[in-house]
Image (cartoon, rainbow, N blue to C red; front, side):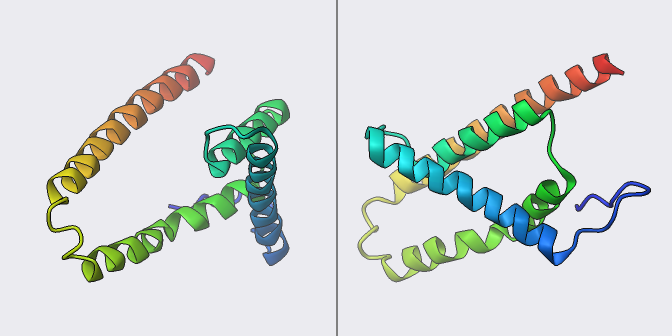
Length: 132
């Protein structure tokens, strides 16, 4: 589901798409630098997302070009799961005794994700409706 530009707003150009991608990559790169410099036990992409969140909070919102870039990347998210699935297929014998743990981790991760996203959406929708 992609957002259409509002009236008077231009559609996303290739330069806007590239700019959004560069901002996302720059935040991830800064996360790598911070993790390497401090030795924090957090993944660099998580640190990068925290940096991006801080920038967006200071800015007061998400610019159209960054939102559109993110939506395009989210629409291709299923492709990110293809390499691990292929790896599990070819390493099936190596995981033969670990399937209960893998299935448990996937189920627990899915339930936790659905619960957290539901709570977050409830909070955000509640806050948005009280603002209007």
